[in-house]
Image (tube, rainbow, N blue to C red; front, top):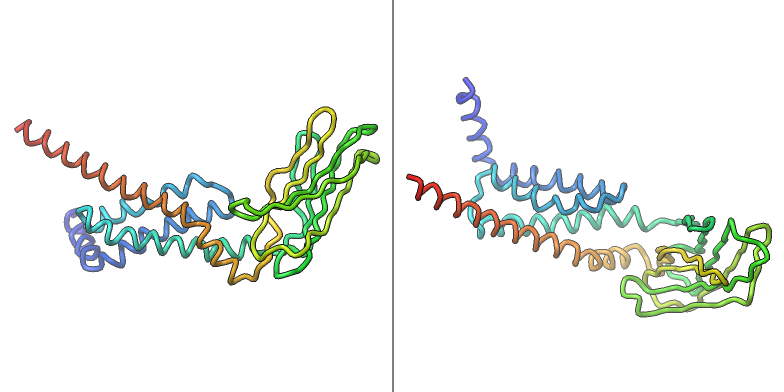
Length: 249
């Protein structure tokens, strides 16, 4: 009975193998991409090559050349889909970003956050600071993702009022692009520094999409390399198993 049920299923898959392969390769991979974009599960992106390989295996595509022919275009499609999903999520008018530190927290404000503008106002509000301590605040802005262009401003000696310290600066005439902001408080016992906080985005959404496509090339290039390496490893294991079977006879 099971064989009777399996035979029509196998014929169905074989007859529609390109469609079945595409569906079972893309849908799990897009789910992995969504989990990364919304929940930061970065490691799931590296399950994409496995998803493609399994789909090829069960739809009857054999041989490295055939699997390269079908797998690499899927990775390219997933690269484009990943960008299409990520851009609307990241290209938003985020006015403030709060980041915890070892000593209180820092709220970074960026206005305007997106769009071509001659001036972008950056401010940082530090909380939970010690009083009667002299701080040396710095705001720095870096071009993304290469960090080639840097602008920064240092402030005069400042003290915290009731644990709070606010600094702000207007960065003018920034070249079109996407930037990171870092706020630092240097003082006698060390410093309090935020991570690299994305923004402002000094470009329109179409330009930003092209920027993100280019930005994700290394990631999906690595996924492609892992996929190709997996194909060669699978072939090596298959050849080894065949030789063992031959010698055992």
